[in-house]
Length: 181
Image 1: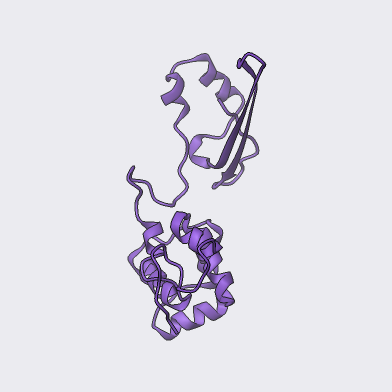
Image 2: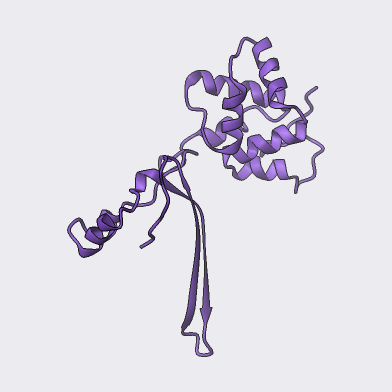
């Protein structure tokens, strides 16, 4: 049974620091979906069954991919399923669908590659020739999941050390290395 929904997508009565409230506010879609499914306590096969009763067909595999961030529902039929999920998972209408909409820069929740090396260093350079010799994967086979940078300053506020950690995910097969420039 539905209660009054608050802005940001959580159901009335949830504390303001509720993980679902935060996930619905900031995304990404897969995190919000996974958090809502856990909160509701339904197995994916039960969710699929409830949706089928409404005439909506989606596989358990697709639901699993969606909540792990491996796929993003983009087709019209899939978006209808997401709208039904909002009701089934007892969250505010539009809270999940909003996370699928393009951001101001025109991007959606789909993984996007970083800028191509050629855009950064030019198309005819020794670095690109070296990358070809190293048989590095092209940018369209990887995407950055997260990146953090720590800068350590010396006593006179000069750069002493810089550490960068980057987590990348392959979305095509046979990727065994990554070169960062």
